[in-house]
Image (cartoon, rainbow, N blue to C red; front, side, top):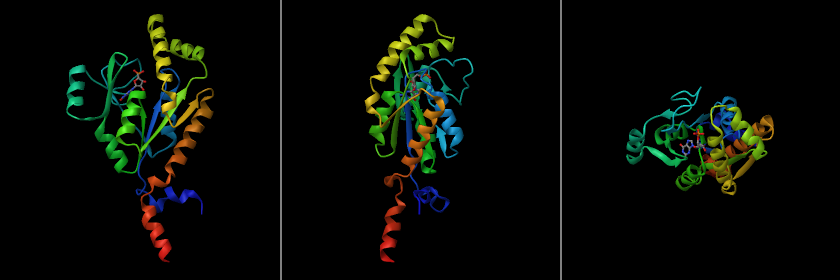
Amino acid sequence: MTGDHLTGPAFRGQRRGLMLVLSSPSGAGKTTLSQRLIAQNPDLVLSVSVTTRAPRPGERDGVDYHFTNEEAFLEQAFSGQFFEWAKVFDHYYGTPRGPVEDALDDGRDVVFDIDWQGARKLTQQAPDDVVRIFILPPSLTLLRERLKKRAQDSDEIINGRMERAKSEIAHWSEYDYVVVNDDFARALEKLNQILHAERLRRTRHPWLDGFVGELMEE
Ligand code: 5GP
């Protein structure tokens, strides 16, 4: 029998959902990678964060982020509605608790596109459920090019983002996996491999206790 039976239809719903945390400096391709990963995996959902920053062109409220103001954000934060929240650059970002808990209870996995502070906080809260992946750009020159191509930031903002990229990268060794996004298809394939292997981890299959107990009594 292959390991596939662990996630096969007979045992569906009995697996604990996992929390797949993706971090990277802005411009390393993390958002596109996570969108494609979700499109390829029906049991995987994105945690949509709440933020006080303004939407970028093309971003949709409720899809990319829940956009809000500082007062409403802090009210949500102090009433315990976030799994974690942090000030990143000049804005607040938070992970709403409800949708994540619902998805995990349903046996679905959740992707978090969050920074190293969020990764740390989620790990403290749910060490057994969190799988952390850091996405690296192949070079800083390429990262700068990608940020420039977004064409909506001035040189000054791009320089600031490059500095912040370096401080984000400094946390790379706090992650379980590191994927260099030098080739999009290959990086996506690696994310799929990590996801599928992590789904098979023994600790995510609490039903095994009973199953093995019965096996031994046969
Ligand atoms: P951006 O403004 O470029 O979308 O995101 C800026 C940074 O904030 C990124 O590193 C992103 O991963 C991070 N971020 C987005 N949502 C959250 C969140 O809910 N919590 C935390 N801690 N960081 C977040």
